[in-house]
Structure formats: C-alpha cells, structure tokens
Length: 271
Ligand SMILES: C[S@@+](CC[C@H](N)C(=O)[O-])C[C@H]1O[C@@H](n2cnc3c(N)ncnc32)[C@H](O)[C@@H]1O
Image: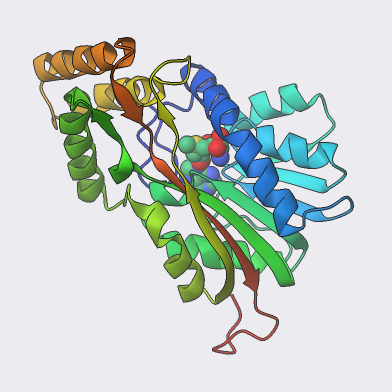
C-alpha cells in the first residue's frame, strides 16, 4: 500500500483504478446534476481536488469549462492524463498546498477527499484560497455510518472495525454529515446541503462496499487491527450478503454541499 493524503488506507495503484471507475458509475450522474445546478457553465475555470482518475474533471472539460484536476497520487494522475488524451490538464499535488495562483477559479469540486484527511477544515481553507471571491465550492463526502444490511450481516462488525481504525488515524469516516460545518468554519457561505443514499438488493454495484472493505481490510490485518482469520470470516460474510438477493445492502450516505466564498471574509483574514 502507498500512503496518500493523511491517512488514506485504500490502494491507489492499478488495483484501485477499477474501484474508482465504479465510484464514477455510481456517483457521476449525481455529481454532474449537482455541478450544473450549482451553475457550472462553459468558460468557467474549474478545479477538482483529489480527482482520482479524473472522470469528473474530464466531464467538466466536455461541457466547456477550463478544467484542471489535482491529486496526490502520481500514478492516478498518469492514468487520468492517458484517459484524457491530452485534452484536459492534470497535476500532481496536495489539496493542502496545491500552489495554485490565488483567487483564480470559479468552481471547485471534491468528492470523497475530505473524509480521508486529518485536517479537513485546513483543506477547505486551501480550496478557498484558489477560488475567486464569490466562487463556488462544491463537495460530495460520504458518511459511512449509514452503511447497513437488512438482515444484519458481517458488514456491521466490519464497519465498527473501520471506524475504530479511522479514529486511531484521526480521520472521521462519518465526516460527510459535517461538511456544512467545515465549510462555515473555513469562512464559506453555505448555499445548499443535501444527501442521497444508494440501496441495493441486486446489481453489479451492490457489492461495492464489500469490495472496498476487502481492500481496506487487508491493510487492517497488516497494521494488527484484526486477525487474518477474522478478516477472512468477515469478507466471506459480506460476500454472502452481497450474493443473497433478499439481503438489502445500503451504501454510505453521500452528502452534497454548495458553498460560496465570501467576497469579504467574515474575519477579514481571507480563506
Ligand atoms: C476515494 S478517492 C476519490 C477519487 C475521486 N474524487 C472520485 O470520486 O472518484 C480519494 C482521492 O483523494 C486523493 N488524495 C488523498 N489525499 C489527498 C491530498 N492531500 N490532496 C489531494 N488528493 C488527495 C487520493 O489519491 C485519491 O485519488
């Protein structure tokens, strides 16, 4: 495993690419609607932080925005560039110290980034620094505490372990519900807050969290949070829940936020 960001436990190498493609399949329609509803339009300067393989950044380019994607993972940026075929700009960089020219972008987007960070409010301030006064920060972040199955299954024990591991790392896997507070604390005016919550009985996306936990769980075994035997039992239990068409699997609830960078910051100190 390569460690990215503060405490990123998922594989961001080639084996993580297929997972990010599924993230795109599940969430991109909602993301596009959110961005268009927020007012993204042709000619806007758009930046996506933690862009992964760049699905959203490329789509923003396709609607005429002048789009840039940034991610800490050089491997993912390389793949994003290949997929863009030279038509969209991608940079390796951290949301904390991206080095972008100040007050340069109309709209920013980040998805599934802040909940992996120890200092989400600092990251939001850093996003704010790149936005023009009055620019829009659009975010989508998960609350993993909303994951459940009915009837209950191994997912529940795995979730408890994931939260314990997250707490030990100082990251908040329920952070999506706190998006509005992070934005306010960083000096943004919150314009819109909403959430959606995918549920599945069947279908190719039902097992996304079983797959994700399987990937993250191998690292939990390596760090000693869980024995290999228990890991094998739990991943088998999650697979059974995914295969059973009468078991409902609820994914993480996704919180969406649209916030405006104040023209005159409240404390007068800027973002
Ligand atoms: C769960 S992935 C989500 C990727 C993409 N936003 C999506 O929704 O498909 C989290 C991404 O954040 C990136 N990341 C982690 N820490 C970062 C940081 N400090 N600055 C920029 N990107 C970071 C990781 O490399 C990874 O690509």
